[in-house]
Length: 604
Ligand code: F6R
Image 1 (cartoon, rainbow, N blue to C red):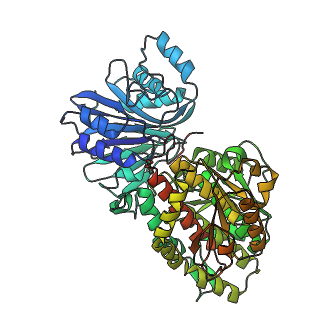
Image 2 (image 1 turned 120 degrees about the vertical axis):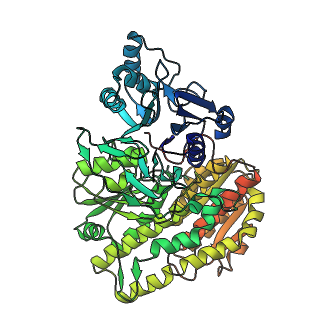
Image 3 (image 1 turned 45 degrees about the horizontal axis):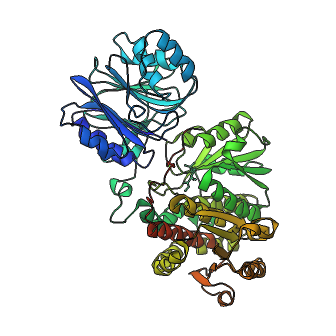
């Protein structure tokens, strides 16, 4: 959840660290701090925005340092609890992301040895453990410290006595090296150093690295030196900037004509009449699969629910969608089922644990992710990249639509392999898939209609979203988007379920957003709208352009184009995203950084 940056180079570390922290700000953001070695180790930290820390730091000269943005887990939001944490003699500083499970016991032991603690965090024990073991070599001391720690961590440490060196180590929490010329970086996210380099080395669990401005040494958990592969990232700095949009979320919503195109590119071919994935993924999909289990959290979980409808419809294979936080402890593991983990970041702790659990039970695992080199890609049997570019806004948008498309391509591929899909049908699907970017653009061009409706929702205390079939998970996602960025209570329901309880909450002041598609559920959802109207509530329908009947039923109608029945859910999702965005904007909410939320949930 927290963001980490380390720098060893020739530039002014103050500028590099602050710049990187600002880029990491979306990850975790209740406090921040830096430690810079300028002859002496100097630490500056503060609660609130990075600018609060920036104001504290004088123009100092150091070219080695570490920085951190915190999302509180242990200990409240205070200056003392902000990172970096330091040893008693203030010569060693660390930043940490993760949770140290045995920190109370370690703290007591260290206190008995005379260590004084200044914070309530679990992380501070790391600085004291390193100090306790320090005999002039920082990596030796870090190795000794992590041997005593139980839990998850990525740690970056510096010592005043070795002023050109930064040491990093990871277990179940991300850490990636940025390789520069006469400078090197170490961060929780690539975006932290993207401005300076696109050359990266991903660290695996248990690996430790020592960086100076000219050297990178990586060792495994037995301290055997390992040669790591350097990779080149295709994202560019512009992708990680707002480019004139008021918020990252809005920019990312508007990127969807491109991201929808990118996720399809190279994977669909009418000429060869096929869907193409990397060889190992195709092998996984061609196995005898008797069921699919999808594991994910939050919005990715809802993408999984959409995927269930798509895969079952085309393949007849039963699909079970499980919250990763539940699956990791409960549920049936079946060796002949394929487990698909969906995780935009590739670093969500519960999803990674569910993946490991599935593998230990002998299941084959496939990951759908947006981040190349993320932990999920490295612990699975195969992965499919969403190719959406970095998503900075905390609320997932463009990655949700690309996850749905990947799941649809998986469904098509399995159906082809099972010979359940003829070439004419595939041609038809591909033809309509290619129209999706145009449909998204079409919705974006109608944003004024959505703003007008947002005005009706902005003062609501509670909003219901309803849908049937594949529109049911979309209603869950629509409600999640609204609640997380506008702070209005919102719930998504399968429309048929309203009378089994939720109706008790419905009053004339509860607007209902109904997703209406002209399929086999059309008459039913119109009947549900009638039941809602009978209770005096306002109904906002999201309906197809060609639906002329809906106006007789709903109070307001937001339109989307659907020239076919191939993934209308993509255009509908964009309507839901814009609706949530504009309601939150009218309410002047901090859209890119909703309270209490962080982009990447790397702790359980
Ligand atoms: C909501 C949102 C979250 C994430 C969830 C899983 O807008 O973004 O619910 O979907 O934290 O994240 P990933 O996909 O990175 O595993």
